[in-house]
Image 1 (cartoon, rainbow, N blue to C red):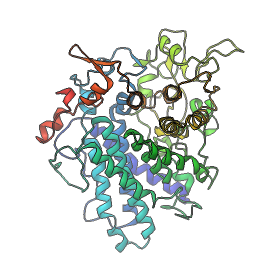
Image 2 (image 1 turned 45 degrees about the horizontal axis):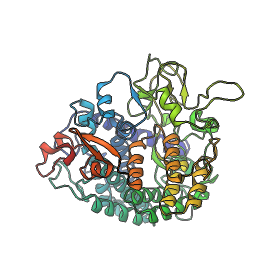
Image 3 (image 1 turned 90 degrees about the vertical axis):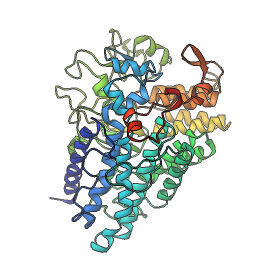
Image 4 (image 1 turned 135 degrees about the vertical axis):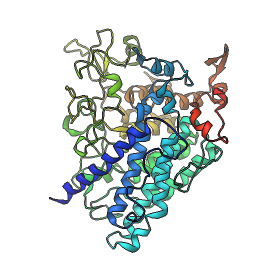
Length: 532
């Protein structure tokens, strides 16, 4: 058995165990930092001894954070439903989210508003940072470089978890050391301090992690845990991943000078992952690759360098699941044996969003006269199926087995390029903003200009709405757009009172309520004011 096969089998075993954690983390709650077994993958007597322990514990952090984001499809329920484009068919809990009734009493809402699943991943990362150095003294195979790179990844993952939580809840407890057993009782920390910590962690990690693992990268030459870059790309975070997260934190804070700088670093270093070390390239992708996995370039199928920040569910590693994928919510016959989807984009919305007759995502083909089906199947029907993302086990686009293998994609080339366009527009570089915008949508059949889209900021967010539909971005994009526009129009109504976006945000309305289970377990935690 060659090393690449061994590497895949090992990853399969590690993530399969963490997959069970996904099921445990998606049900029930208590005051423990993690209801599942300890984040250690072995007992204290045998753990933190060998190279294999280091690898297993590092992969467990990725697995726990992946579980935290996708459990109960939380990534999409929180990102795509509030003020989003999806219509719900029958599920009352999803309808409550669409209506902004985030404190409604439904099991799914109760579970996704409980942040303990993120603290399980944070605890695992802190534990790794504190304990992994012990392996250096016991196993010569575990080199200082290997250890430094591993710790840097743990710091990146912990920073990502904190940024992800801040977007959802605002102020959250900042815990930087591991705790086994009871979750320590502490107050919420200001999001400014939390994001400051995350930024400093990412900047430190970015100096250590390589652009590629297990190849010719000068920072980490040679194999990484017995595998080459083709084994690791899309699985673990690189130096580009660190800068993408830095760019997003800066944009969330309204610091567009840094957002522009960090995003430029990513685009300037695309070549570090472009047709190197035997792996598929990091590149912008055409419609067939995006929606049909043509040429094996889809960021959603398998694992790809195109998944610059995200979590794969590769079938070959035994990671296909029935829960934790948008396909569970959007697909129906003829793609899977299901009479109708749980949510869909209605025809009026499709027409209002996709207005350019040349848009390859959705428009009428001038040759055939039929509507394009890249994003929507059965447009003429009552419920068009949003079929942009459809990765069925093992890698098909339809079938009778309803296990899904699509990756959670937080960022890809098109996404970070659009974020750069946003930063440049906010800084007044209109020409640069249009250049970045058109680079992002170059393979979508449309071109933006001052003539057809004079409001470049509006055009950028309209493009994000189309390109990133179904990827968990809509609500967070609305927040950043409203912050930039500073409109005095009515954004929301509470108890009969109209509120501008600024009033809505000041009251904490952009955030989700904190789970009652969290508050009951920790008297120091207070509810977000909008939901009191």
